[in-house]
Amino acid sequence: MRAGALLPPSRLREGSGEGLSLVHVPGDANCPAASGRGEAGFTLLELMISLGLFALIAVAGLALVDSVLGVQVRTATRLDSLSNVSRAMFVVSSDLEQIARGRVVSNGRDLIFTRVAPGFGGPPVEVRYTLAGGTLLRSIGGAPQRLLSGVTAAHFRFEDGGWRAGWPLSEEAAEDWPRAIEMELGIEGRGTLRRVVALPARPEQAP
Image 1 (cartoon, one colour):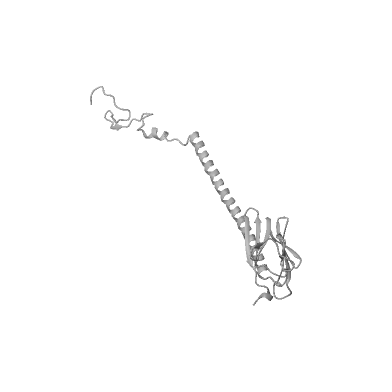
Image 2: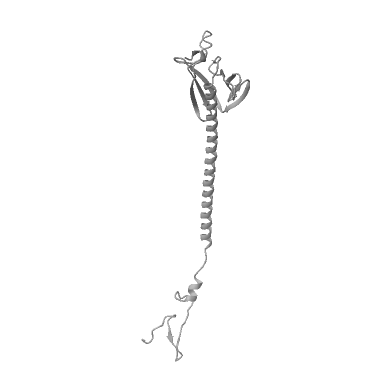
């Protein structure tokens, strides 16, 4: 070794006949003791950033859950409304398809006719459809029933070679039936629904 050369602090050096020894100098990057003290935890800034990210993820998750629940509630409400409308249309169609002897009377807003008795046997009963307070009412045998709520308008028309706004056309034809009856309902939030029911021929007109 060249005379006067300085040895690095962590280099091995020869003792005076006592073998080799390792010298540790504080601050030496290659020193295990120094590198051990350099392993620190999260800083306060890093911790705050992590907490902020977790908070954002939590808020986004809650918003997603709230959105899914809102969609489920709206879907259930629409399905209930659709079910009520379908049931009302079925009842009206069933009544008209079972029309019995008697007159059909309407001013375009209300409808009165006679149908066969529900169930097994019995005399025919009068059926009346009218709109009152946003609800379509069905009165059968004088007993009113709430058929459908949320109705903004109800109109009936009658087909007899052309659509008529009322029935009968005259007192002379009071016993006649139209060929078909159209019911048009304005449903809140759903627009206008239209149903046309063809009537059977009157018994005395049947071949």
